[in-house]
Image (spheres, helix red, strand yellow):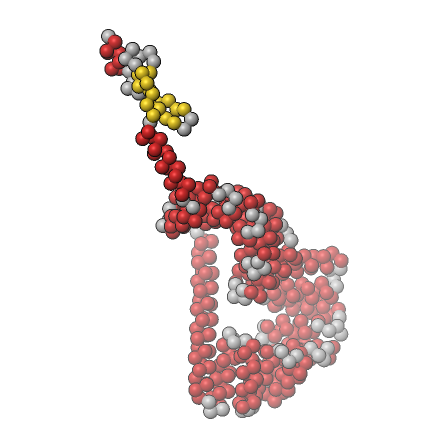
Length: 413
């Protein structure tokens, strides 16, 4: 019976004591252990594992994390970054790397938590500040995003992402003036960014509407209120509506500088040349130094293809008042070409093309001037530039048209 009980009892049980593991072999009677034997194999395994972990440096773990990340194994990369933080909890960049990993996966809550911890360890990490600010923005915590984004921008004033998200956060909080300042800086650094110009236009429109509302609250029938209303309509290409408002301003202040020009400009945008000419002449009676009105008088004559000598005189007067008015310089050259004075037109167009190299029309006119001057190679080169710019412009127009059609189709479904 005793033999049977011995067979049915476990052969050994583990007893843990400190860092040593033992095997307790049972006595035949089953009452107490016969003796204790160290679990040397188990102990050696633990020691070896610990030795392996200690020998792996943060640099090695970082390399393994980047390898895992590159292969798409985000879980393994996360584990490596966490291991770095376990053995080096004061290593600020490790928090930045783990936060960036979460950020790339759009796990913004986790990213924000890790980055906040990292910035407590090392506050001087601009990249971590920027990532934290953007993560907080994505979480809808716009007020909280302001400070880290400002810190990132303070450390690196040319951090476009930090400045863009700072502007966005300010817009969300209704702080339009501050947002406009940052968007203006971005527009200077990234003049081809459509998003920045869209946001800036949106801010300006909102500020204009707010200004108009305040002006109307003071006096809705003032000259300035009508002018402001007309400018808002004109900015939205509603020239007919703008004309109505500008006419009211002209009736109320016919001798005030600017009123006739605003009305004439609305007519000019609609190619109503006779009405525009009348208003520009009246504007010059009120303000003889208005170079825009003077230039557009010459421009109208060129558009109507009449009186090139008078157009030349108008554009010369405009350039005398405003030497940097590039549009007047181009039209001055156009008038010279019409008068068969291509040699005189060349320097004007060369200056104009440097000021605005992306305008196709200037290259076309310059090609004409070169050809008329017998410079065929230069004319050919300018026509090639013109053709390339025109093709780019047509492609952009076609792309925008496709987007409009696509948006309409999506809206209809």
